[in-house]
Image (tube, rainbow, N blue to C red; front, side):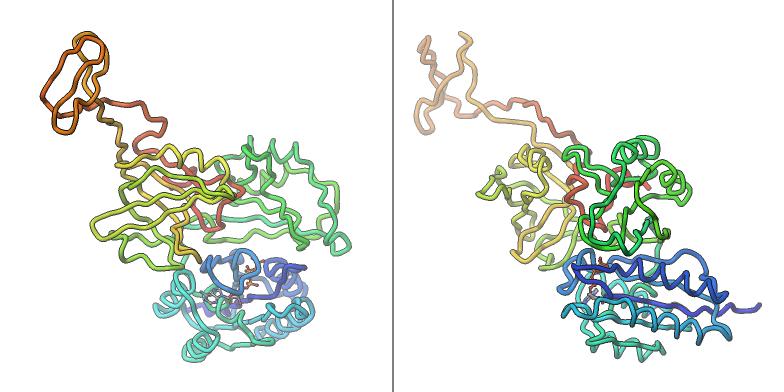
Length: 421
Ligand code: ATP
C-alpha cells in the first residue's frame, strides 16, 4: 500500500477589526497555488476555537487546508508565507499571524491539543513547544500568536461538521455598504432551510448572512451539505461584483465547545457545558435587560443568565419557575455567570399548592399557623393544614428545546434544527 503524504497548512490571526479575514486570505492563497498547478485536497477547514480566548477579533477561527507533499511543497510554502506577509493586518497590535506547515499524520496528541484549544487556553510558548515536538514548521509573525490556532485547525477531528460558503467582495468595495438583495435572502432561506440555517433572524428582521464589519466577506451561508450551498448561492442576488467564493468544512454549529457535566460544582469559569439542574428561583430582570436565576443539583448551585442581546429568548426563560428541571447549554463568562445558549425542559413543575376550596365554592383562607383553614363566606372550618395540589398550565413544554435568536448565537452553538443530526 502506498501511503499518501500530505502537507497540512494552518493559518491564523491575520485580521483586525478594521479589515481582512483569515478565510479570505486562505481562499486567495488557494487561488495563487492553483495558478502554479498546486491543487488543495478536499475542502479547506474553518475551525472555531475557545469562544472565551482573550485575543480573538471576532469568532476565534483558524483555517487549515492540505496539499500533496511533493516536489512543489517548497513553492507552496513560499506562496503562503509571501501572501500572509502581504495581506495580514500587521498595523494592529492584536494581529500576530502564525503559519504552520506539518507533513505528518494527525496523531492522538494533536487531537488532544486541538480539543484543549477549544476547551481551555494555550500560551504561545506551549504551542511552540508542542509544534516543535511533533515536527511542525512554525512561522511566527510579530508575536506569532496565530500558531496556537493554526496547529489546532490542522489537528481537530471533524466527526460532526457543517459547511460555510463565503463570498468575497472586490477590494475597492471594502468598508462600503454591501449590496445584497434582502428579498432574495428571505427566498433562499425559504427554499433551503433547514439544509441551510442561520440565514435570517425573523424576530429581529436581521439578515445574518451579511457581516457588519469592514472585512472582505460579502456574505456567508451555513449548511449541512455542499449541494444546498450551491443551490442557495444561485438564489441570493447581489448588486456588486463578487471577487471569489470558497466553501469551508467547519465545526461551526456542532456544539463542539460544550462539555457534558453531571455536577454543577465541577463547572469552571470560561468553560462551556451541558448541565441538568433544578430551577431555584423565578428568573428576574435587572437594569440593562439582563435576566438571572439559579439552578442547583446535589453538588451546588450556579447563577444563570440570559443577556439583553438574546432578546425574546428572555421571554421563554422568564416562564421558568422553581422546581422545573432543565438541561442548559452555555458557557461561564467573565462574571462567573452561566450564560445560556439554549435549554431543554426535562420536567416542568406544573403543580401549584393552594388553599382548599370550601363546600360553598369559595377558596378558604388560613385560620392561623397550624390551625387549618376557614371560609370567610360561610364560616366553615377545617383542621387539616395541607394545601391542595393544582395542575397549572405551562407555556413551556416537556422535552422541548428553546434557543437564543440567530442574531445572538455563537458560531459553535448547534441550532435546534441540527439537534437530531
Ligand atoms: P476572525 O473570526 O475574524 O477570523 P478571530 O476572532 O478568529 O478573527 P484571530 O485573529 O484568529 O481572531 O485571533 C485569535 C487568537 O487567539 C489567535 O492568535 C489564536 O491563535 C489564539 N487562540 C485560539 N484559541 C486559543 C486558545 N484556546 N488559547 C489561547 N489562544 C488561542
